[in-house]
Length: 169
Ligand code: SF4
Ligand code: SF4
Image (cartoon, rainbow, N blue to C red):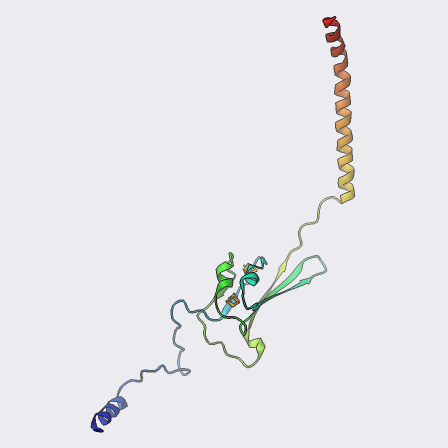
C-alpha cells in the first residue's frame, strides 16, 4: 500500500520544517545549564590558582612575568581543546572570575581559536619602611633604653629598701 506514504509526502510538502534553520538564521538557544565556551575576567581574578588545582585535564596554565618595577604580569590561559567543560574551575573560583557560557559555537581552524586567556598586573607588596639593619639598631636601642630605665628604678628603690631594713632592725 503506497497510498498512505503518498499522503504523508503530500502533507509534508505544505508543513513547516521540524528542524532548525541552522546555520542560517539565529542559532538556537542552548538548554538551561549548558556548559559552553569559557569566559575569564582577569579584573576579578586574584591569582589564587584554585582553578588550576581542580582542573583534572590540566587545561589551565599560568604565566608570570616579573616586571622591572617589582610588579608581576600574570596571564591565565584556558585551553578548550583539553577542557572537558566540567565547570569545576568556575565552581571553585570564589571571585567568579571564570564562567561557562551557553555559547556552543566553539569552532576554529587553529589552536589559538580555542584558547581563552586574560592578563592582569599584580602589584608588588609595599616595600618595608626600614631595612633589616635599621630594625636591628632600633631593637638594640629599645633594649638599652629599657635596661637603663630598669637600672634607674633600682637606684630609686635602694634608699627605701635601706629604710625598710632599718625599721626591721
Ligand atoms: S580564576 Fe578564580 S580560581 Fe582561578 S586563579 Fe583567578 S581567582 Fe583563583
Ligand atoms: S571546565 Fe573543567 S576541564 Fe575545563 S578548564 Fe574548567 S576545570 Fe578544567
